[in-house]
View (tube, rainbow, N blue to C red):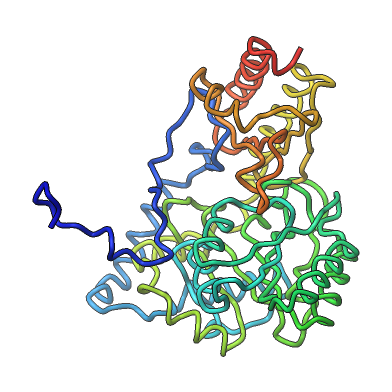
Length: 397
């Protein structure tokens, strides 16, 4: 007991329990910080109708605890979709439904890494995954990228350096389609090169394809998983970006021995109630919904690109992604968007600075801007306001 009479937990916490807490996401007037989807594209009425049909058919089964693998019918839908869209041919029984792709990734992190093990990522990587990796003691090392994705020669250099230190490399984590936060899509030649390099060093790949459905121009590029016939590539996907993040449904594909180990870290089955609604809805509306959703995203991307050009001119550079939810803005070296982030938020515009995505904490002159949630007018007004705020504080002239 402490002197105040309250029970003292200070010596009882796990060694890897962080001291800080994650707070609720706050929203600026113009919110470009978090990758929420467009609320107008959420198929709310259709989901309600689909849920009623599914409950009428299977609702009594909710009296049972579901399979830890998840709803069989939704796993079959995933199996069929992966075969059609990603040239991945796995039976439904080899697919695990998870609470979003984040849970799938966390399961694999826990199953594969010991504290101090090296994990390879792109030079900037989704902050949620980076946080999970570091929470479990991974030595996260980044690999430089260009517009085609990971640079093969740089990957070789990073691998050789770790090997020279006798540090085990557990896997390469990559988001090859509409990479978060950089926005590029890895070319087919790069995918083949990366697979060859990692195979020669005995390193598996964790392919995070959660944005692959959000293409609004250009041609699809096959998955890295489809190029591999050895079981080297683990694969995760998500329904969060094509249905709703609040449904919390994703999926994992991995070799049996990896799947079994990863399942031991799963708290419980994916939400059966949400799975029933999603399976019933997507069985009839999958591709028409994706098409409608992506048409809206393209208009939003175009609005943000246009607004950046009008308001920032040559004061910054930015990507023009062919899909996904993100634009990566780069300002001159020495610009500290990390230090300025809270000031911009307080004055009405939210973004996330580059250091949040960097394993080494670099990228203070960069920012990720999300265009998925706000409408086009809000995007146009918000980017103009961001430029005004930066101008008032001398960030841009």
